[in-house]
Length: 367
Ligand code: SF4
Image (cartoon, rainbow, N blue to C red; front, top):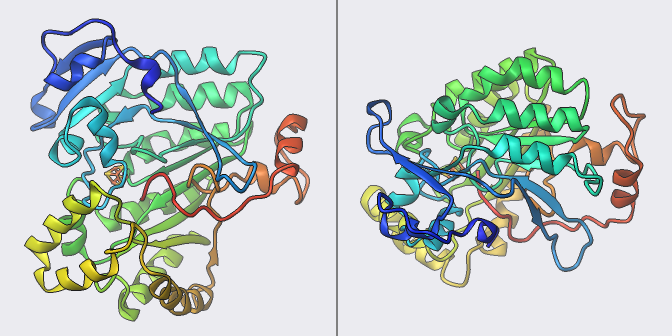
């Protein structure tokens, strides 16, 4: 568990039962602007998480998670179980009990300044969303972006949050120093379904407008169509509409994956399905009876359906980072590609050349 370095030695009387584990808990806060949400502010001891790659390949990744828990509240989110390490539940608590690393930017700057730091790409948004609503209050991302750019570290951000717009000028500036790869997660293009399955997220239209704004700032922004929900968002009309709107936003790259349902998340998702689409329960039970992934046949069927549509819309399929599940950094691609415009990093280049990137079977989170 990557939070093990932050486990606590002292109990905080104001904390919820499971949060007594957080000895670095500063305080728990509720405010009228965030009704129903409690922020648990902690002093982080580390900011960079090291993610081993798939067993069959060499690559590994680095991530930063300024928040734990996510008020975007997607019912299919497979970061949910991480809340259980704090004796909080993977359902409502994940959506409403948000741990905030209030000093993450300072800790990160110290870690990036170490001579041992090799400037590998760092991914944000692979576990919980860095531009969830809490970011409006805590403003942790500007300090993180500045620390990464100042240290010459390439980075990517994956989000559903339109709050990203606030930092676009800063990100554009950072992109002159290091490769910056943005990705917006937009999987549901039916407004009613989107509000039901991702109740805490900004609308699809607002996210598409944020993609367009990022591109206007000269940044690259891909779209993650994740997850594709069987029998709900995999119809030809939904896919056509989605890809048409993505193309119109100015994005050029999409990444898609069918729904994963890990234990813990599966129960939460199925209770939503029973309430909202009971007619689909038997079909989902059959599909996900043998594991977290959609059956191979379904994935083949989906690929045969969506890939010609992606091409027909003049879009291309992007690549995921094998270790983190984020968009694959252009800092990696450029090793074998055209000359870099930013700083050249021989350590990064040798790491990448030594790596054989295998497709990830079990990405760490799902946007
Ligand atoms: S899928 Fe992403 S945006 Fe949705 S709740 Fe999980 S971390 Fe938040």
